[in-house]
Amino acid sequence: MKETSEAAQQFSFARLVFYSLGAGVLVLAVMLPIVLSLARPYPTAALCVALAAIVLMVVAIALVSRRMLAGVQREIDARRAELERRRTQEK
Image (tube, rainbow, N blue to C red; front, top):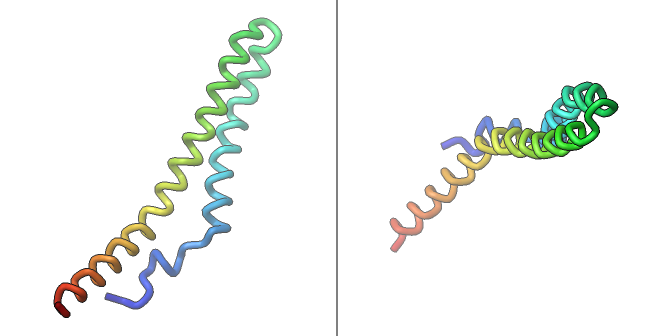
């Protein structure tokens, strides 16, 4: 196993934040014209769509974050398994 894997080398908290919040902003940017077009004739519908947009924004942020952290989590799991294997061999 390499000392530092490709996933660990490429990980950056700044990039994680940028992509996650970017996905949330993209959802809001898509939903904003819909909310504005519904605001005058159907204010209740606009409120419901705005609340749904907030929920979708949170879901988008969570999905992007989980996808980006999946490789790093695999690396953590592999290193943990390697340490456990070494400990059992020493005993």
